[in-house]
Amino acid sequence: MEKDHYDVIVIGAGHAGVEAALAAARMGADTLMFVVKYESIGRMSCNPSIGGPAKGHLTREIDALGGEQGRITDLTGIQFRMLNRKKGPAVWAPRAQNDRLQYSVEMLKSCEAQSLLEIKEATIDKILVENGKVTGVESQIGQIYLAPRVILAAGTFMKGTIHIGKTVYSGGRSGEPAANAISDSLRHIGLELARFKTGTPPRVDIRTVDTSVMERQPGDEDAQGFSFYRDIPIRNIADCWLTYTTPETHRIIGNNIKKSALYSGQIVGTGPRYCPSIEDKIVKFAGKDRHQVFIEPEGLHTFEAYVNGISTSLPPQVQKQFIASIPGLENAAIIRYAYAIEYDYVLPHQIRAGLECKNIAGLYLAGQINGTSGYEEAAAQGLVAGINAVLSLDKKEPVLLERSHSYIGVLIDDLITRGTSEPYRMFTSRAEYRLFLRQDNADERLMPLGHSLGLVSEKRWKLYQLTQEIKQRELAKLRKTNSVSTPDIPEPTRLYQLLKRPQLRYEDLPQYGYTIPADVCKDIRNRINVEIKYEGYLKRQLEDIEKFDYLEHKTIPENIDYMSIETIAWEAREKLTKLQPHSLGQASRIAGVNRTDVTALMVFLKKYKWKKERTKPDEQQ
Image (cartoon, rainbow, N blue to C red):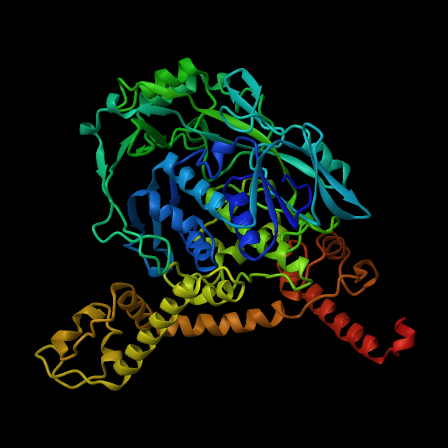
């Protein structure tokens, strides 16, 4: 029988929506997920890849918490690489090229197989609110569905507008309709919206590409996946290819720059600085005579290839001309033309650290609606929103991931504290403690939380515990065991100290008399190497984190009247009133709030707490 009442409703089934819906259902909530097109669940609408610098960290954290993105990536990956290997371990970054269609198919399977999760194809027009609390949603055809918790993960669909040259039409992405009414509904309930812009490059028929003049980009021989403690074979069965734009490419684009929707004044939304269109690159980096262009297969059962590096909103005829000027693409047949898309998003200072709206109880926002870009950023927010929606149903405190313990925490804290003037993209440079927040130890940092929430299975949890036991056992043995005498190290030396030498690794220990146990897998070996070699740096960073956490755990009551605290500067009072930080740590990161303001706030809170404790119960009433 068709129902109209649920515990949690999720609007949108992209990377944020599916994580939110799966988490909610797995935690026991009766969940309904809406999607504009049923077959587009989990669609990779742009690049058919997951991971990369910082983004790979996010996906591994999602997996450690019990999310789905890492598992589906491993199932559908056709090439795996660990980027930045020549640099330190803090920035090593896993990346996978995926079969785009199969990724969506596998995500749909997960959603359809999940108990307590129902899926409906519909466009939602209204968020229903009574007395400051969400009560449900209304669809385009007037159907009403009730729920005390609603998660909005609309992606680029809210008043989405597609631009190709002078051609402009409504769309959430190519071939799918926009959601044009829900923006008005959000404004009606008091949320402030703005416009962003993003784009996608053309796709070509790889049979018409001359890869012989390009640089081959193979996967790693020792390929690593994203999901912890799952027996998923990692496959490297496809190559990517690298070529470059030419002066002729730049000349063609420069001569036609006014035909670009971006440079004609047609687009008003701000685009991503760190993933610019090719016309943006030509204008802003005029001194460069070439830019990288990657040819990336879209899957194993298609000849479609993604041309990474030349996103554009130029007209089709100009796209043809400049693509033909790129080595290897002279005869490329274009399957899909590139386009830019503008869409509405909600200014993120209006949400709390748990992703619930400040002024609408029970309404959660996740993904591009909060001003981010990227599948990984979206999925991370969706997972957090789904978890916290269910916890709030049970009247439990929300999970607030701290920036000192996860990239997900960095992401959310940046959004709600600093806001964003362009589509937000995660970088390792955004994290103050990135040596501690490595991709390889995401399980150690977050899997205990995922297990306590019921999102990590007992099988995976036991494998995690076994890994930790083996690692700790080995570290203890290395601290107690001496090396045998060798020509290069004649004096017996603790193996632990020996491994601090840059040129030596755990794998080298047999030549110094140590027998490596069979249960020490490659992953554990890598962790031992990193932890021993970087022990001093890690110790200092953990000491810094301890100091950082002191302020993070100094919570601020919600009813503070900042405007009445005269010891705080006027600008800081305005910012604190607007953002309503949940802790002194968050307050200290708000632009316009300086150290003296934080100190004054700390003094005020001590007095405030003292007064509250001195107040008699009948006076409080």
